[in-house]
Image 1 (cartoon, one colour):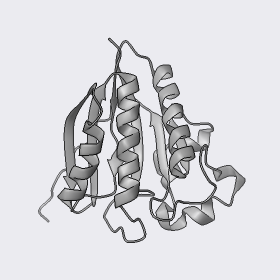
Image 2 (cartoon, rainbow, N blue to C red; image 1 turned 135 degrees about the horizontal axis):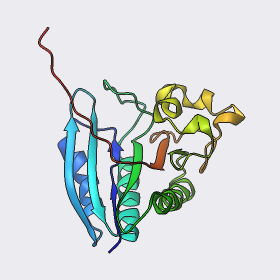
Image 3 (tube, rainbow, N blue to C red; image 1 turned 90 degrees about the vertical axis):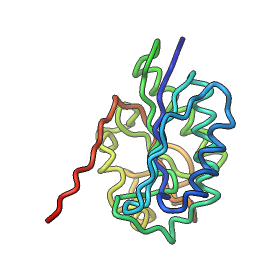
Length: 190
């Protein structure tokens, strides 16, 4: 059975009711399992992890991105993490009977739908990147939401999908395919 993971990062980590609305929309799709919801108040960001068959995961991710675009206003967003959109980043990871190339195709399918139906500019990154400048997420995200309108004026930073200006409230999104990412925080009492 084909199984992929998707780990969208939403720019809301404080209002648990908004986070629940986003994850509820994602869970409305059969064929996916919600593995984790990790909100961070300081970063004002939530990392969601889902797995399932590719078609269901793509549909679930789209619904999460759509709901986030309805609920999160990036003009008001503040947090201790770099960000450029209501859904800042949405990676696909191959798990079982799928390849990285498959996940690249899934990322393009989702990116096209987000750009067309939600009018949110999308950059493809990591293995999905359309140029070497877009492989590294930090480089794509540089300038953050506040600097994206100016950045997008350069032909070098024309989005892969969607309009050539940030969405008024939802900003910009990066979608791609990548390997597993293990992240952890260490608190220092200094």
